[in-house]
Image 1 (cartoon, rainbow, N blue to C red):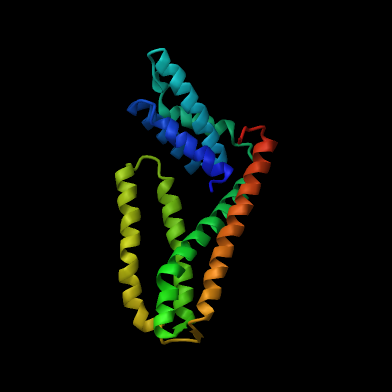
Image 2 (cartoon, rainbow, N blue to C red):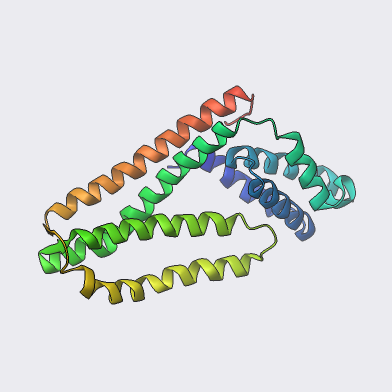
Length: 226
C-alpha cells in the first residue's frame, strides 16, 4: 500500500509521460539539481508537481518549459536560493527517516534471500556474517540514494551502476562466506528468524516515521498531500 509520499511521487511519474521529451528532461534536471543542493525529497516532489502543471500549460500554448522559464541550470539555482531559509534540521530528519525505511527494506530482502536460507542449511551462522550483511545494506542504500541524486548523469548510466552494485553482491558473499561464516559467535538458525522480524520492524518503523514526518511537514508548509 502506497503512503502519501509514494502516492504523490507515483502521480508525478505518471503525469510526466504526458509531456514532451524536452520538458521531461528539463524537469528531471531541475529536480536532481535542487535535491543535490539540499532541497528535501518531499519539497522536491511538490516542485516537480508544479513544474508538470507549468509544462502542460506551456504545451497547450505551443511552448515549452525552457522557453517559459529559461535555462534549466539558471532556473534551478534560483529555486535553491529561494529555499535556502528552509530548516536544515527538517531536511536531516527527512533523510534519516527515509534512510531507516530503505535500509529496513534492503535488510528484509537480503535476510530473506541469503541469511535465513543459509542459516537453515548450516543450522548455525556467524554473527560476523550478519554484521557484514547489515553494513552492505547500509552501503547499498547510500550508493543508490546518492547515484539517484546525480544531476547530469544519464538514466542509463545510473541504472547500469545500480545493477552492477547488486550483481557483485553474490560474488562478494561467495568470497567472504568461507571467511566469515566460521568466525566469531555462532547463532542458531532459528535465531535468524528473529533477525528477519527485526529487519521488517525497522522497515515498518522507518516508513511510519517518514509518513508522519511528511504529513506534518506538508501541513506546516500548506502543501496538498492528498
